[in-house]
Image 1 (tube, helix red, strand yellow):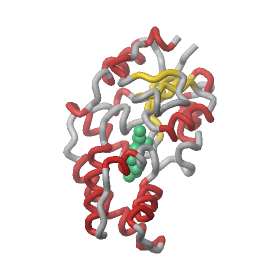
Image 2: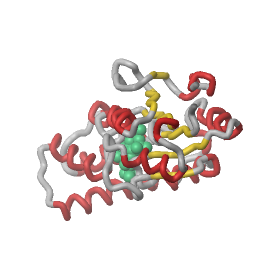
Image 3: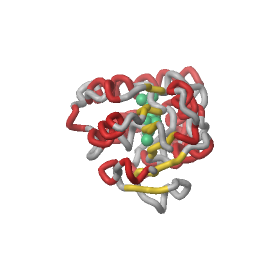
Image 4: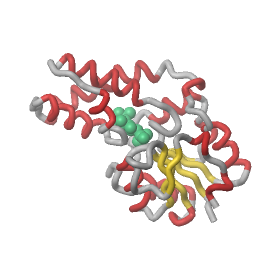
Length: 212
Ligand code: B16
Ligand code: MG
């Protein structure tokens, strides 16, 4: 039976993609090209540096690794400024009741995110106490679709992967969950998240009975 629920952050718990979008767009515009919402979609679940590299490719611009570091930091400073102003009202619908249901039922909860800013976001939204473990972009070396982030959650919880369920909104995240040997529930569109065991529109559609 299911013993742990592992949640992705951006797109599952909160919609930080809007802030990522604003910050990437500002950087792109400074570099002299545009950045669309469609392009932003493709950066979901992708690490900061890899996102920058993709953006530079789309803009047809070449930068040295040192210059890339500077640009990634600039984008992150703008992003951090925005997430520092987040409030509990930005928690996506159904998240709070589902997390509370899990904890009441003795099911462990973990956050498995590519973001190096996960702690700030959990603190600002007041969600930190609802997670037994947090594994973020600072703790892993390989990013999704590599299963490392989710396997580390399971190891820290002391629960085998076959008893874990992952909630993910990105294709790379679903792949990571399956590669970890876990059940994967997609948050979004079933036509997009084809590798998921099941797809729902949001956690507001989820309850514990559906998991068993
Ligand atoms: P940061 P997730 C991901 O979060 C975002 O979807 C992705 O757009 C972002 O580039 C990545 O985190 C890294 O974020 O720049 O804050 O380290 O979906 O894995 O929770
Ligand atoms: Mg996500």
